[in-house]
Image 1: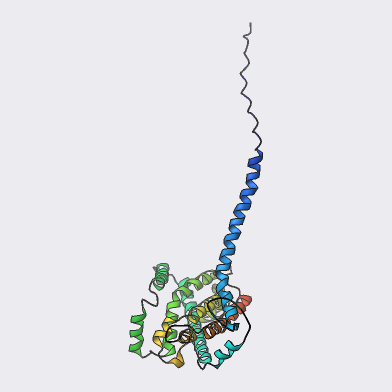
Image 2: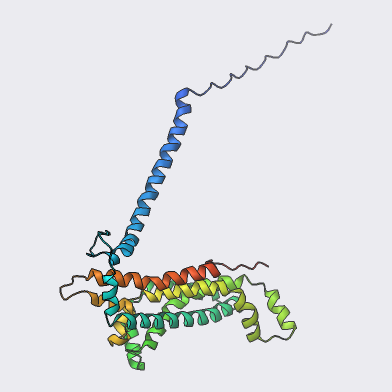
Length: 300
């Protein structure tokens, strides 16, 4: 006699999910629109915040009554005529070019050699040394080191000489320049250099014909960066150069204030516009030729 098997109790069927209500369906698009509106409003505020100084720089030099406000009640070239009639305008711009180009060339040359050496030579504490130099150059600013720098240049006879200013500015920019260029050198496969050695290339030929052409975009980036840093530097040439004929435009602009500290807006605004043109043109030319990047382009 077979035993009757009772059927297993069936599992309770899961109830289907309830459809979202109309209010919850409408809340999603409303929340998205509100978030985007806040983001767009924040971006507009930032754009206005950064655009107002540029607007003042473009409009004020051509205003008949220059002031703090970025307005253009009329249009005139009288401010340009006053600036070009000033005997300090062109000599100061020439001095700025000498300091900026000299410092940029020195920084590029020394940074390329140091970056190649640090990338290829294995020495204990290499990376720690590089990071320590970068950290110290950021902490010990020009203001903090100005007194010992002045005393050192005074002892070696470089006070009131543009060569001394170039050396000081280049020394402050070198750690960051080496740090940036080292990444470009690291991207060059070592097989390129090994192949050149097989064919009898000397280290100088390898550096000149293989390494430097590959890191040329990095050198252009570092050169423009160094030129901009020197172009707008006020403290170092102001302290180290006492002869007005040797002072750059960043220092000469300081003389456009009267004895009471009131600015001459006609000269300051026009000179600021003229002073910014070389840097903008250089940036556009280099960016069109090489582009700006902070790592090398060759991958092994």
